[in-house]
Length: 100
Image (tube, rainbow, N blue to C red):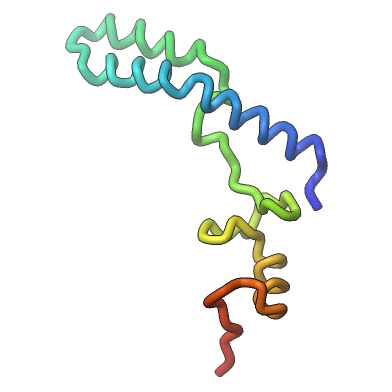
C-alpha cells in the first residue's frame, strides 16, 4: 500500500493538470504559430511560469486498489500483484493463467 501522502500528492497533480490544460495548450499553439524568435522566447517564459506539477509528464499511473505506482497495467489500472491475485480468483473477465 502506498503512503497516503503520495496518493494525495498525485491527486493534487491531477487537479493542477486539468486546471492548466487549456492555458498550456494555448501557449504551445502560439509558440508553434509564431514566426519571430523573441516572441517564441516570451511565450516559452510564460510556459515556464506555470506550476511544475501542472505538466502532464509528471502524472504517475497508480493502481486504483493499492496505490502502487510501479508495475501498473494500463488496461486494468491495477498493479501486477493485484492483477495476479484477481486473475487467480477469476475476478477479471477474459484473463487466464498461462501454462506451458
